[in-house]
Image (tube, rainbow, N blue to C red):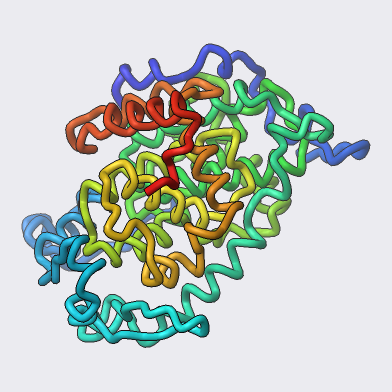
Length: 395
């Protein structure tokens, strides 16, 4: 770890004793809850043979976004224009099999064209996502503890914003997958929606949540010592290990939360994996995960909201949302679902006039590798706010 990584520890968070998470201020209502290398076998290969043998090469840390881009670059794709979608349905049908829903809405079976790709497990896709749509309901925070001021677990949104923004920067320094960040935030929010945590222990909770998420999502894990080091003295290795046991026990080891990126990738199939559209959607999705306004929302709805707004920003409006989008978003009808429309308008207002500061997140999406889509997205949202958001669904 370089010394520069010390800069990302927040002065608001690192001031605290090193006692473990459960020792101070963790309770459920009135009742307080308290917690108190062997040698490797020799190998027959010589050192030179080990260096040449692929089994002993240390794999490089590859971002999942990079693997997505590489896959799409080499994948034989069928690309179509939005005007073709709206005017000539049979051209879209070439990509798959034309289907009809119970409401006689025609949608395109895009999974069929990937039946020869064993990685896509087309035979099980619908069953997998049916399970994820059910599972997500059981793995979201019980309520929005940030906006519910009457909750005994209420926490100021600005406090969580500092915490989450620090997590974004730590996650970026460690070069972890985006899925790891989202799961870490979910673990932290689920715990905070059921427990009152002392302000001095919030950084320990955040770094432990990321530590647990990395074990679930990553291939090459950062070391425990790196997590302790990144807190700049606010947490020791023993603190993190004991907090990990306590958090997992309280969550009943239920960390198989359906990640919103899974739903976003499925919806992206409809527009032929439009790269610019998906980068903007990822920015909106990550902002929604970090914003206090959307704690407790289902991941599938956040993914659909992000894709809808991304298409609206890029003027992909022929059509912006049809029966195929409805099918691949899990049945979300953007034109008639008032709850979904309120969700989208709430996101536009949050991007146009933020309620909390998320500096690290915004800086992340200003970089070239993320397409520098920050300004385009923010400017569009500010314009919508100036017009009272009446143009968001006026397409």
